[in-house]
Length: 184
Image (cartoon, rainbow, N blue to C red):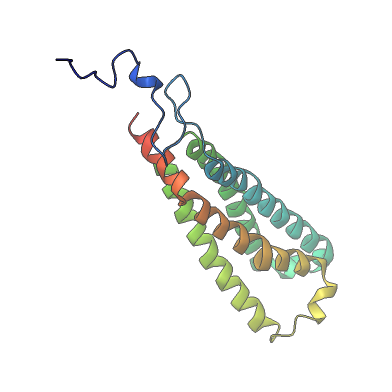
């Protein structure tokens, strides 16, 4: 009578192929960053700083264009300084949390998703306010460089990149990666 062989006999369990759907393992046991998380982190590293830089540029253009009226517009100037400051601080936070998310920190993904949702809500409010302010007719505004920068940000950059980011970090390879890194 022969004894059935153990399927693990003679094999190192670490050499067995990983189950489908889980990130590939590298020899040190760390899960490999899937493309979805890698691309989402690139989006988080590039787009918020780009948006903050556009906000700073927009502010500088506004100062140059309306510099002679600044003594009469302190409240508008202060409001813009606050919003530009928030954009710069948010961009720095996006960079930090994107790097942490890439390392597999699920809580960083959660923070970035909340920041994305807040950014989308604020952008929706900005779009509505802008359209009300111009009466739905954006034609006359197209001659103003500051308005063009703002429209590119609120109609293109922010909606596309934040939705793309949220989708990428919740796709199956991303979820599997965060589950695998949580167990380490």
